[in-house]
Image: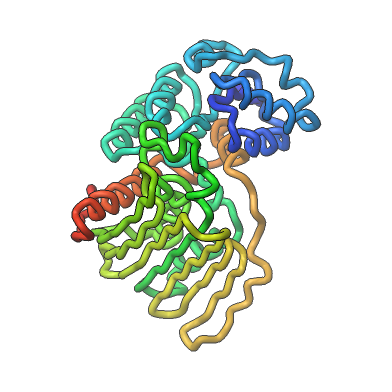
Length: 334
């Protein structure tokens, strides 16, 4: 195993710029190729990354991602393209012998999730989904508390995410069904679904949901009630026509509760309602660091593709329920 991983980027839009910053902070990683059919995306990347990656203009740029996959100077790829392209591109990358970091959502159907997981298992390569909250100290702390039993049995989860998604993404590929595969619940809402499932360790039995599309082809608001396989209940609120960002996540157990507001305002109460000290709960890192370490054999993948499968299973159940006027819909695989 080489001590330096050569990375190609498939898709150079907004999220790719964040990953460039992360990769530049990892000595064992080197960006060696780019792919994006839109010159405007490449130009923005050059502009935003000039200080951190002055040699970015000197590396190969491919119009076709398959040409990037054929480049012998690429060991691994990050995929930051529109959602409905993820399945094809990740499948091709694994079959080309490349390790993959795949932006969320992993795929846009449960059937594709199972097929991609089968391909990954056959490839022997690292496949990781880029859910960065797995590496945020607040959520890592909450997971550790729940997994250790300190919260008792999780009995209720309330998750709310509000943002100006309808306005901010209007006219973009995110509101085009053929490219996005769905609306906000499958975009930023994907983070919310992933984190409540990962932190709690629970599986969903069924979902009852209503959705509002307003004047666009994809879902904007989702109001969902969840029943978990252990009997716990939950609510999932994804709001795309809010004036600004707001998020609240609550985990209520038989022996206490954890409340996380805006991703940082962590409060842990014990069974008596007394606050638990949370001043020293570790550090926040990045998915890119874990991905590179996993490729080098230094760490386990902390966001395996099974997380992506769980997310699309719940998402599909919500879509199906909403199409049937809120009828409770079983989650595939539950």
